[in-house]
Length: 308
Image (cartoon, rainbow, N blue to C red; front, top):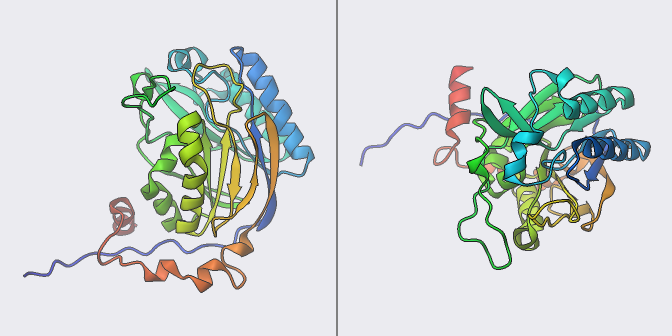
């Protein structure tokens, strides 16, 4: 049998970021049918998190509007014109005034006649550093008992690329809600040198109870990095009932902090020494060096390696 030569790529080395120990603030928000009230509430909880020492702050999925597909267009904003986008403008202003980095959950984005479920990332100078468009849209097949039908792709277009952003707090990969169900995305972030993956989300009552914690712990332990999630609170205004339980997970799958289902500002300590810079999990369990890139690899990473 002929042998096929396989071109390999080298994963990005894990760099030591400017800040290796910090507090992350998780803002599990109540959402109403009034956009201005949602913006005010988000600003208030961001400020609460910052007052408790958080310098990296994460918001939930679709925090500026009810989680209903028929309302996304009404609440959508253009990322190309932040001055006319009240949700984005607030995030920019509060990031700058507090000197914090904000992983801005997600809001509906309108662009060239399309709608996207998009996560903005603002640096401490108030500038938009990155944007992640949700790649895997949540389309339910036959609803589970007690659940409503939900088909995100009716109104939302899917994103086309993964998103990693370099911050003072290391390299952060972004996924939105259903993105967490696909381990390939998290693995590609790990291969790109991510220290932390942030997942704004809004799992429902059935998938949340069964999968929400399990998926986060699995993504963390398989990739030996931190995972942080932020959900909407359960009493948010929507026919889509939300699980809540925002969580921060360490690289060995241990839950560092979690909430219930109510509105809350969760503060957790992150220390990247747990990843690499002491007698850590990556030294005692060197999974990266044990991978068989001669058998399996990511096509997009190989393409980037060949084009670099």
